Length: 356
Image 1 (cartoon, helix red, strand yellow):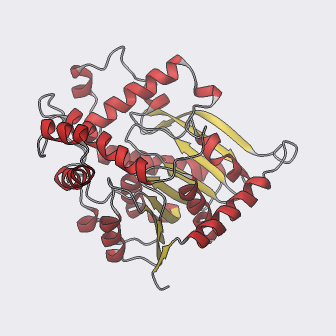
Image 2 (tube, rainbow, N blue to C red):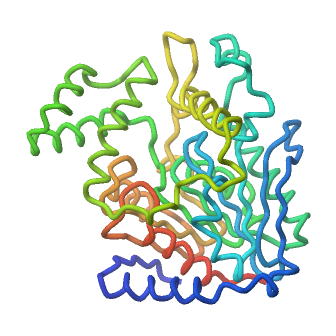
Image 3 (cartoon, rainbow, N blue to C red):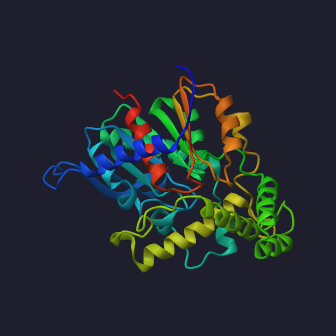
């Protein structure tokens, strides 16, 4: 199949939105969903109890989602964002090791230096976990394979899992695809250029205080990310109101604590912190060098205004992919995060994937 690139024009984007709106309107009634799956439980994954939810129509294709972060779960918001999909798919959400309810099972009273050293987070362990979750879901649902969808950090993890075990998946959908995560200098230069062009004195002062990368502290990278997220938000369409408000089950003090502490724990392990003696998971990762051959179709969804994972980098990666089929979807009103156009594009792609 010839590789394809889709740059969503206003007309095409409207068509996709109408497609998604039709699906939402067709959401079955409670009577129709009597036999739908609604499983929420801890599952032992490689010796660790991890929180997995499975919801939707068991007769339809199954999608396994890898959330971003690491440490940023989608489960508290999944019903807000993806509920209308349950007529057409069975949806699998997973709180990864170090995330939310999974982290809550082993969370300390305080996130101490000793705990960080005694509980390292590694890409190899996370990849093994992702494979085990996919195997569990296939067995539980009695499916031949799954569709794999990863966002941001989840896209990096998704590539590792999809290339290691293509036999588990029909296709891979990457959104805000991470390619070379250890390049803070490139991000700094982009953010500085924007701040200079806008004469954003507050941002310029913060950037001057941070200095140029590389940084020894994870918190310095976090401050750089906050500035770039501000610029992304200014140029992209926000998600619908209420999408990222926790559903009732997850709106409580304990879950909030687990999410916040898990996010801190995961972020410092991903970025690394030299004074704390915490190694960076992202060091040495280069998908352009190491992960360009897939045995399954690959779809990449990219926001036009994404600074963190830029369209230039993801396009280079896409062009280098050696795959049975591939498609690149560029969304003009999106940045790094979720909005309606992103979820609509995910839905249209997932519906197009041929499954047995």
